[in-house]
Image (cartoon, rainbow, N blue to C red; front, side, top):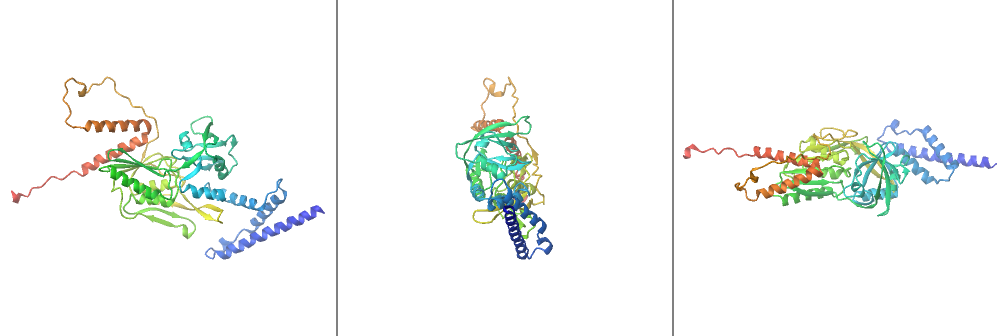
Length: 450
């Protein structure tokens, strides 16, 4: 008798769930008149199967689970099966996403994705525990505090890595080129992402680092250009550093490119829905006044970074240097379901001005420069004119002091960042060629005036 009552409850629950799903199917079909009848029709047999599975779990699973949790898990499963970037956002995840676009959140300082069930590092964020500990783009995190990552969702893994300031976590990492996994203990911190930094490398040569594309990156980038122009008599060239920049807000990347172009298409997107088609074009005025530009990228440069590099490469506005970028050429749209819930869904692919899709391919640099440690071979025992007793002094005034300062800067870059060193050398070469092009033409005398 008890079994019969249970069976009746099961049948009733199944009918209730199936009716609700069928009602949703009917509503979805009637609401979207722009979709053909064939496309709008939902698979009823599969919905009945879903209702059966839902009911079996609801009644027979070893632990009782409420319907809300079951349905949320079903939504997570649907989205996680699409691609690595589509996901369900509960209240905490939704809040974290909104906070990360403004530039401050708690954790280790990693931009991550999923690959073959493991957490893959897209890029460490500047000046964070992860970056200081030497975590690299491409690293696979296989354990968190000894707990296997395999089987976790990306949100679960991220939540494990976040925690109170100064609390510790042990990551077990697999790195290409190393035979064995290794452990790294990190101390959590409040992560404050400084989107844009700038400095003068040498007189006339500016450096702008964009660590992540946030809501204010466009305006901060314009200010950085203005500051470099104020502190240098002439901008002879600039380096835009997008290495280990995991991306961010699409509009911010468009604003950065717009500041460097006079006109032309920047990026366009294409998806299934009409409202997923967008084109972004540059407005008049290049704030850098056409200064030679080198853009640095690597395997940690993703998404919005690739939009910037691709647009500047297609317009031949910059020389792209470094190594191949990450290859994330898709656009995610955050669709709120309520004030506390949302889904992040891939809705379009983006294309560079020349129609290139970056998805799973990345930006290939014009000049490939691998990150390396380089040691200069110095000649020993050499004698120069300045070593000879009674040599004549130079008539160049303080020029030797300036040369010494430049030499010190070059030596520092040479030892610490060979890619930036090569970028600076390239800019100097471009400037030398531009001086040749700017040479004044010979003055022609008017013979009638002689």
